[in-house]
Structure formats: C-alpha cells, structure tokens
Amino acid sequence: MKRSYLGVIILAAILMMNIVFTQYMVHQYYYENYVNVLIFGGLNIVLFPLAVFAYKKTINMRA
Amino acid sequence: MSDKNNKIPFNEDNYTHNIERNNERKLDRRGFMKTLVGAAGVFAVSSLPWGAVAAKELMGLGEKEYPHKKITEVSKLPIGDAVEFKFPGDHDDAILIRLSENKYVAYQNACTHLRCPVFWVKEQGEMICPCHHGKFDVETGSPTAGPPRRPLPEIQVKVENGAIFAVRVKRYEA
Image (cartoon, rainbow over all chains, first blue to last red; front, side):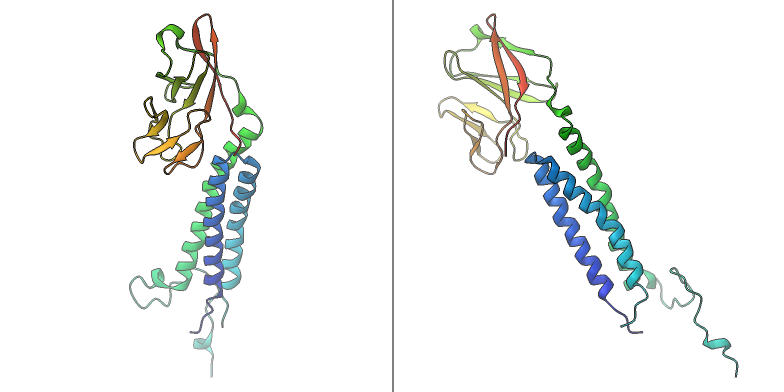
C-alpha cells in the first residue's frame, strides 16, 4: 500500500509551531508582555483543531 | 462472477480486520499521527493557565496593594547591613539593604535564574546568588553577571516612626 506522508509532515510542522509558541508564551509572560502571552496562547489553542483537521484530511490520502 | 470478495470494507477509522502482527496498529502512520494530534491537544490545554494569569494581570488584578508590613526598626539596621523578610506572602523571601543613612533598597531575593536565595555581600557591595554565581546590582536589582537575565523585583519601602515598612512590589519594565 502506497501512502502519503504529507499528513505526518504537516502534523510535525504543527507540533514544531506548538513548541515555538509555548516557548514564546512563557518567556513573554516573564517579560510581562501579557498581550503577547494571550496571542501566543491563542495560537497554541488554534493549532489543535488545525491538527485534527489536517489528520482527517490526509488520513485516507493515497500518494 | 460475484464480487463478494472485492468489496472495500466500510469506511472506519479504527479498523481491526486486517491486523497481521501484534501491535501493528501501534507502529503505523495513523497511530503516529494520532499521537501528534494528541500532543497538539496537550499543548493547547497547557497554554490555558498561562492565558488565564496573563488576562488576570492585564485586568489589573496583579497591581493590588498588599497590606503594609513592618520589616524592622531603623535603629536595628546599621548602614551597609541587610535583613531578610517575607513580602507580600509568607513564602516570598525578600531582602532589605540599608545603603546609606536614608537610602534603603528591598528586593524579592529569589534569583531570577532558578530561584535560589540571593544574599547581600557587604564587602563586595554586590548581591550574589550562591547557586550559579549570579550577581545583581544593588541599586537597581538588574543582573550584572552569571546566568540570570531579568532584574529582581523591587519592593518599595517607606520609613515611618523609626520603623521600615514594605509597601508594594514594583513592576519592572522588560
């Protein structure tokens, strides 16, 4: 069975962005830029439905 | 010829009818992608409390004044000496340093690197964290050497009737 690894790549990219945003969020919190904390926290939350969406879209894809 | 055996099984995500090896479903692409999605979910959930405390700070709840707390008597603190106290909570270590006749500085003395207690070295005129040799400027609380990168939170003090009181914790600008 040939399969597409596009989904895996997309999800890995999303997870990488998660890590980056979390790091930013924590640092901005300690620098007391609370608006930035909310922005990056929001981005982190938005990434989850995006990941579910990417999973569903690519799970039955054939290369 | 009937195509009884040529049907694609119904569309489901958790198929179990073609497993050939033990733990096969744990090794495949789907399982791995599900793990990745789950990890994204963990990240999303774990950023909620940070957002909550940030929103709380934004609404100004973090700016509240703590009840003034007496640290010590002026007469008990010679120039150049330091005294440790707790402010604003019972577990928030802080240090008060008398620099001259009328100049006092106070900081929350948890090192901004890994929260070791910072202490005052009179002979060198520096505040030193013993864990990783971080040093702080005594006038401003900003780090001068070692791993810490953020200044110590300053505590405003006032002198009244020969006693020193802690008033509030100053916010610092990054």
